[in-house]
Image (cartoon, rainbow, N blue to C red; front, top):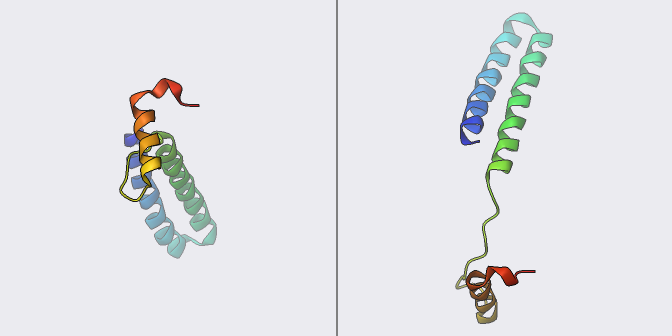
Length: 83
């Protein structure tokens, strides 16, 4: 998934740059076509990123209260009792 995200990011950047140049020389219609393709690659990049990142389990933190940290440690020690 990481490769898909990188490739779609590069293609979105290339299509964005191309859309400006093509729009200047050939008109608004061609600009719109390349801009839509660039937006499609950007959406693919964001969807690949969202799917690739699993949610992180909570960790003890100095900003939490002692009760919250104790509950987090208990969940880490015995994951079967979650929910």
